[in-house]
Amino acid sequence: MPRSRLARLDPSAYALPAAVRARLLSPALVIYLDKVRENIRSMVAYTGGADRWRPHVKTTKLPPVFAELAKAGVRHYKCATVREAQQLLETLADAGVADGDVLLAYPLRPPALDVLGELGRRHPGARLSVLCEDPSVVPDIPDDVTVFVDVNPGMHRTGVPLAQRDAIHAVATAAGARFRGVHYYDGHLHGDPAERPAETAACYDALMQLRAELVDAGHAVGELITSGTPTFRHALAYEAFAALDGSVHRVSPGTVVFHDQRSDEDNPDVDLVPAALLFTRVVSHPAPDLATCDAGSKSIAAEAGDPCAFVLGHPHLRARSPSEEHLPLSVEGGERPARGAELLLVPRHVCPTVNLAEEVVLVDDGRVGSARVTARAHPLWADEALGPG
Image 1 (cartoon, rainbow, N blue to C red):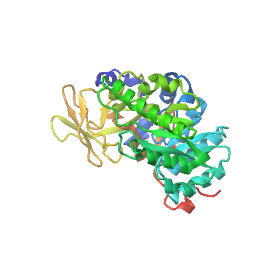
Image 2 (cartoon, helix red, strand yellow):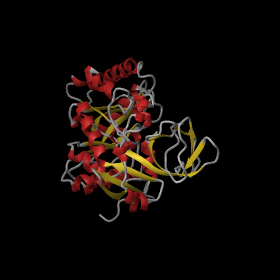
Image 3 (cartoon, rainbow, N blue to C red):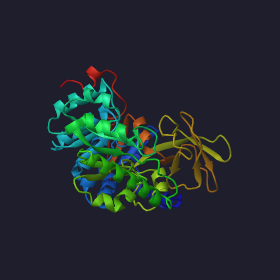
Image 4 (cartoon, rainbow, N blue to C red):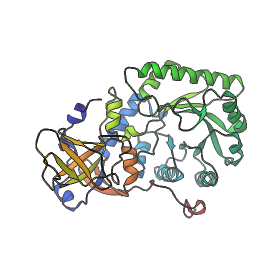
């Protein structure tokens, strides 16, 4: 997506009150809950109903945002860590949702599996699942935790390679009655949007063939999970998923709740708005065509490439590679911001940006508060991971 769509955003829609800015230390992550709700409504409309969406909450990591998803009727979730699972389940319980369905989308090993089992005992109404690619691990998975086989369709991050059918069947067989279905993350398909429909269709054809083979072998395939942010529209348009008999298909994008610069570029047909921006101040003029702000790689994710952020309301400023505490901005025409100028950055990759923040500013239709990012990071000791029961 060209920068022009972000350039058309109205900066006044993100303005912070002067009294807040006067107290706020920078850099600081600001979450706009009204825009979170707007994105959630858009996603429910895109999916045709909340039941088709299993958002990955590794992006959001905040109970107030989990609560907004619950209010919108979302009941199926993915997460990456036991801390995320704990915070999500506790938030759902507080919202009166006892029957949430949470997939820990990671190939956990002991002792993390023991922690997941304890979470299940603390939330007996919830349905917990875990990814598995190794049948020898299945005996270590707690009895009340169900199993999705993790299949690698070309992402080459985790999962049994699609061609290794015997290994996939072995996981399903080992799981037995606890086998839930197939997790098939097609995150490698994020290239040219014009080529993506054909690429995703071929990828999903292969998944449907795998499903047919599993069913023929006697395995009940209750759910197929695909699609992060770049491909979810293509998955929803794939007719065979909507016509499944005996299985349900769900997409699992999570970045969409906050949206970010990379997603804006990858998804020209998706109408979402940035909902998590980094407040920063200009601290230096190291060269005539540079202004450096105080947002470095310790406050905004830099692993997704340059530019790591878009400067809201200042399309003539281009973020250069950050160091730990500094982000130089090239001045490409237009006026250089003064020292002390306050800026808002749309992160290129919002998911790890949220994980860098201990606390965030919460803005909700003009009301300003704060919240701790309680689902970030990892606990250290398995026997202390969940706190008192």
